[in-house]
Each structure stands twice: as structure tokens, then as C-alpha cells.
Amino acid sequence: MKSLIDICDLSREEIDSLLDTANDIIAHPEVYSEKCRGKKLATLFFEPSTRTRLSFEAAMYELGGNVLGFSEAQSSSASKGESVADTARVVSCYADIIAMRHPKEGAPLVASMHASVPIINAGDGGHNHPTQTLADLLTIKREKGGFDGLTLGFCGDLKFGRTVHSLIAAMSRYKDIRVVLISPQELKLPSYVKRDILQKNGIPYTQTTDFESVIDSLDILYMTRVQRERFFSEEEYLRLKDSYILTPEKLRRAKSDLCVMHPLPRVNEISTAIDNDPRACYFKQVLYGKYMRMALILMLLGVN
Image 1 (cartoon, rainbow, N blue to C red):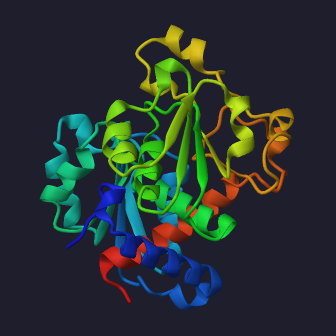
Image 2: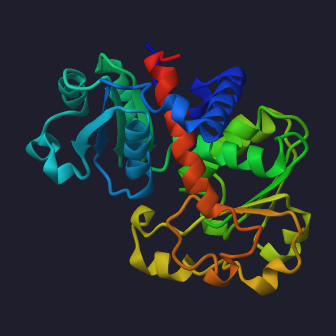
């Protein structure tokens, strides 16, 4: 039984297979509409979510399956002190597969060690968000045609941004990629990500606080919000929250085929004036996320 806790749990071949399945679902949705008939997905969300939770639910429904679960810790037995391990054991009795989001790093891993069904990590604290990474990969594949030779810019909160950490790990497997890290000093990419992924794989990277000086070199611009919920100090959050805002003026310096991505929700780091620009891909990411989660559910359930 396989679970997905970290994007590195998947081989490059498995990722390529998921991308192929997702593209086939997009082309032939009717073929997949009953693939999970009689199967149940449990969504255990101990932390607020809109896109990820609804995307998992939509994915399972479009595969012909059913969904049960909760959307906040207060509505679960966690509020009574039940452990993640016990919750996983209990819910395994009701569902065929579990998607879990939790504010504590490592909670989905603990769940996977005690559940009798596959666990999908739907985000654990500032650590990992592998299914968002799968959505990101499908977006890049469909928009750019492939992964090799791309220059990726990551902008905003690179310290707590789990989507950034996961996507850098996934992209490290492809050839000739370059990474540009754009953030305030206080929100720089953690040194362990630079050491264990970028340096270990010989990926050239640059760090800067000057957004406008590098935008013209990018093939992908991955914007992130400064996350209030990850800060201990409201004062520090307010000081940094408007560090980088993408506007039409800044976008004029970018390549005509730049792909602007964002894991959402956005606050104000991308001007709404950009939403109709053909380079804006963040709402496509949302749709592609549903297809990748459909492909992942099929893989983990062993459905052909």
C-alpha cells in the first residue's frame, strides 16, 4: 500500500505516468466517470482550506466515488484529544483512501504509519504540499511543453512556503533548470532546502531582494503570499506582507511567454489587472489540480 507524504515519494517515472493520466482525463473525461464507483475518500482537514479540499472532493465525485470527512479540527474528535494515529485507524474503517491536511509538520506521515488505507498529504504546516506540486507540474507541462531548460523564479515567502519547497524538489529531477529566489531577507529559502536539493543536485541558483532586476530572465514566475498564520508577530507580518506585488507595469519587462503561477489564495501580491493577461496561469493551476488529484487517487487505489 502506497501513500503520498512527500513529492519525493514519487519517482520521476511515476510523476510522468500521473501527468499522462491527467492529460488523458482532460481529453476523455467520460472514460473515467465510473472508475471509483463504490469507493470512498475521507477528507480530514484539521486546517482551513478551500481549493485543496474541494478539489479532492470534486476529483472523487468525477471518478464516480463518494466523499466523507470534516473541514476543521473543532468538528472532529481531535477537539477531545484524540491522536492523529487513532483518527487514522478509525477513519480507515470507513474509507478506501484519506486526504489529510494538518498544521503540524509530520502529522500525515504519522497517520500513514497507522492507517490501513493510503494517506495523501494535503499540506502539513510549512513542510510539504505534494498534490499542489502535482498541479504545478501539470501546469508547467501544458503551458511550456516540458520541464528541461527552464528558469524558475520563486517570489515572496520562501521560508514558510511549503508549495515552493515541494516544487523545487520535484523540478530538481529535470535537466538544465535554473532557480531564482526572490524574497526579503527574513523570508529566504531555508538553508536545508538549498543544501539538500539545489546544491546536492548541482542546480544553479541566485538569491535577490530585487524583483524587477530578474523578471526578464524568467520562464516561470511562482508568486506566493506572505502567510499571516505562519508568523509569531503581527508586527513582523504587517512589515513584510506587501514586499512584492506583481503589477502590469512590472510584467511589461517579462517574456511574452512567461507563465505566472500562484498556489492561491492570493491577497494582493498579484494585481487583479493581470488576471486576463494570457501569461496568468494561476486559475488554470486550480483546474489542473483537480485532474492531477484524480490521477493520484486512481494510482493509489490501484485502479487501471
